[in-house]
Length: 310
Ligand SMILES: [Fe+2]
Image (cartoon, rainbow, N blue to C red; front, side, top):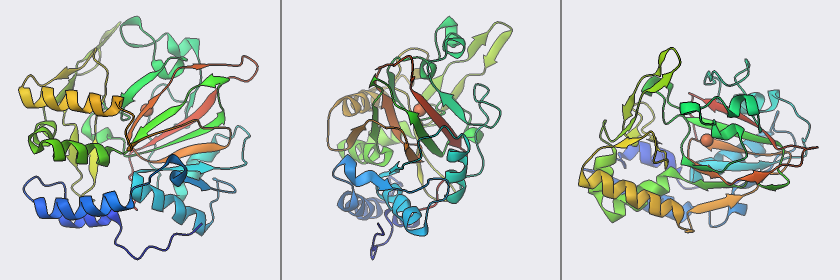
């Protein structure tokens, strides 16, 4: 279960060296080489058996942090199948996560039960549904891409209480791998996506006027404190405005193609009861699903403003 780690942590190496600085190719190459050498080859490499996610042992916690350092995400597998909304909160606390994002659709404890919910599913933008609360597929995104910078989602936990009768698979891609693919293809694309006006989410109109102001921001940004890479992204094509220049357009098209391709950096899995995802706010998507009415799909989602220190 424990991982003997004699190499510098990939992430610490990146933060210390300025690997995400486009003017520092030596640091980027060094970090990239370490990142690619330590990357998981298979989704099974992400899985950690945890006896009780509410109180992981030191070895289990280390194993989770090792996967998160290498791949931005860990998958835990546990025998805890009962619906316990304290589970994500307690697991998060063991990983230094305390500041839950206050979502007006979440329950008061800050944990969103993700299940088909006609009440929530009908309340979405422009009269449309909020996709998470339907059985529809969810396109590639990072969480909170429509949030202002002070509400940047840094970490997330998705715990499966019950899986669907059919479908509901999760697709994952480490945003650091997406960064590598873009920078290797054309560093100008990374520069374009780091611009503060690269991606604008237009204002949302509610019945009483503007329910959310327009939100402009970069796709890639680097945290001042940790030096870590953050990504803000949605593959949606409605209610989003990309900056109208060739580099941004080409970069967005490259990303769409990368995410649509079944490459080695893209992992797919089906969370089963007792399993969950914990890690950085990486790129993810969900396939459509079909519920068993007697046992409908239920996941608990926690989103944090804190970052997991790995
Ligand atoms: Fe999400």
